[in-house]
Image (tube, rainbow, N blue to C red; front, side, top):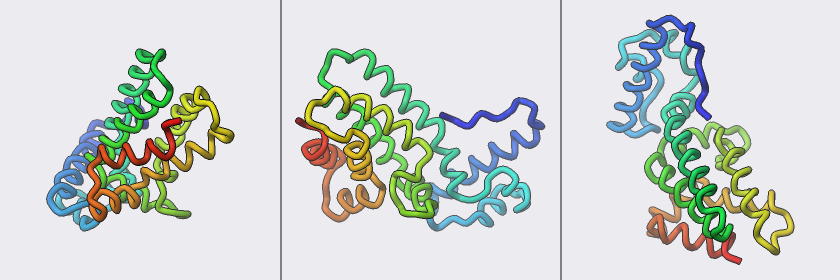
Length: 192
């Protein structure tokens, strides 16, 4: 899942990229993702804007890179679980997949919101780079569930319930805990 970079990059380029990511992460933690600008990142990292933009085209690009390793770990965890628990119901495995995804979302809500908001058509989860991989995994599990006529559509609707805007509203305005949110979504889309 993580973008792989050629080992032929100059060491100063690799160091600059690491510096940018560390600096951005620190600033995001300190001020919140939406309040940090690319100019602030460059200034705090003590690099020129050209250097910053050679590595990252925009703030959502930085957010995505900060998420990449976590997303890789999430998929590794999910894949292992699904294989090891192949005899359990598809509904139970889907709920586990959603639980792991929700844990990632809870931990990184502001980064994910920035990535999602960069989408041109909408602010939906559909805009995140790992959406297709997550969708395909859940679709495979839904194929084991009877009564779902259009697995692709059903999965799209399920995953859109996890868009950051919807999740943020339910979590912070409606007061749902992550577990309550997950259970309510599963009641609608997963349990058959």
